[in-house]
Amino acid sequence: MALLRSILSTAYGPTGRLKQIHNNVGGHVLTTSTSTALLKQVDMSEPLLKMISTAVQHHTARYSDSGLFMGIFMLRLIENAQKYNLRTVAAAKVYKHFVEECNTYLKGDSCGCKVPVDFTSCDSLIALACSMITSKPACMLNSKETQHISSLIAQAFLYSIPCNSSGVTCFGKTVTIGIEGQSVSDSSVFPGLLVDVPEMLQIVDLKRLGSGPYKVVVFNVSLSGDISEIGDVALEIHRGVDPEHDLLQQLLKLGEQVVKDKVRLFACQKVVHPILQHYLRKHEVVVIERLGLALMEPFVQISGAQPVASLYSSVPAEAYGIVKGFCFQSCGSRELLQLLPSKDAAVSTMVLCHRNETMLEELKLTCQRAEHVLRLTLREPYALLGGGCTETILATHIKHMNQSKGATTSAALCVSQSEFLMAAEAFCNSLQSVALSLEHDGQVCLIDLTYGHRWVQDIFFKTCGCGLVEDRSNLEKTPLNTAYHTFSPVSLENTDSHPRILDSFSAKLNALNVAVEMANFVLDLKYVIKDIN
Image 1: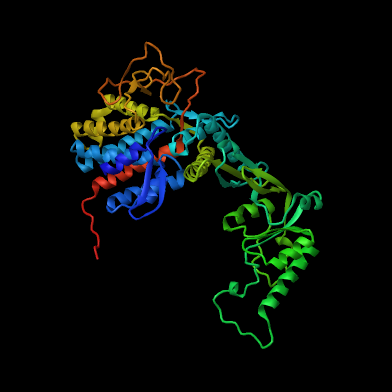
Image 2: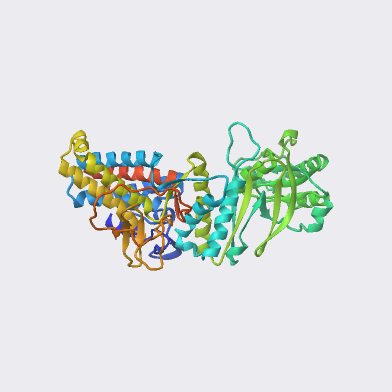
């Protein structure tokens, strides 16, 4: 557990150290600092560690953020319970009580580490996206590139929200395309869907079609004309019958119908027979083949077409869809075809460029998760202060609450006052250790004794970790891992300052609760029984 905690804590934050993962016989080398990629690729032999890893991965699958926070906090709670020699039942009761106190504080109006997300301005959205990107050093972005990508994430998020829908509304789709070897500044977001340009399609062919909208048909079965595509069945073939010729005739019959129905875009999830392609192109139909399963859903969303699953029956009228138009887009070194939706289809394509494959894969993963975090803010339109300030404020709040209510709370929980105080110290120390994990360069972490924010002892840093509080000469601070008098953290009001670093409210709140649940579960575990056969 100590080794796992060390791996997670050294990867935490904007200056976290990268991890390289590879097996002992060579193969692909993964470079990352994200908990998702890290825990997914590392094999663990200990059942307890597997369970902890799975819990973190399940959290990040649902919330896309705060995986490292959850892992570090959970493991510190377990270690501190052992360090202070706490009884399991006492630690579990007190930990559960404190996380409930944290929930009440974070959800309350007087919370000093929560800020509202203003959807009338993009500033909060960009700040939240920017915080996620800067916390992933393997993306290797400078400040200008970070700002550019953050703006694109906010833009893609806004594209994914339907504008004119009524009743229950579902998010749209953001398709991500990666282009290796290009500058990050070439990255962009396009409305609609971008696909590879079909063979032999020229700009003049699109001009010949005239103005849109265009009728669309899409197939989710192979149109290759290959008998083997039928499946693992026995065929009875009469003498003199050529099944492949008959299959091709059926395909051409299908082509004749869509041409007669004035289809202008013919798409297929799989392969289209070259003769059918030639016939369709001759009749000014744009053919897109090998669309792939991943692009089927967004294609259906932008066109309204229903995927046709058979080539042996006529295409029903209701299966046709519409696209507003299509045009060529040059994205770095690639030429792509942009399909524009004819209605309020909330689909966009994010084209991400980076200098090499490792950086590009990390950037794609981070952008997808950052957009998901922005979607979570619609349900709970708040963000938490980043840079370790939320953790130090929570620890300060818990310590202050204990000073006035410690005796009555310990009695209510049926634990001794000394056990209660040690468990409180273990809980607060675990929160503060997460804030301390943000520092990897040997600088001293401080806490101010007015607002309870985290600071770094550096002459170049004039604000706290989140950027909300500005430094001043009379602001008393003390090293974070030392004893200090308890106080109630003051909320900063009537200020023009805005936090520079934000964390997802939903993600961190869930991570906080699951970390305590898992820590209590592990502490209560007595035996691990496994079959070695």
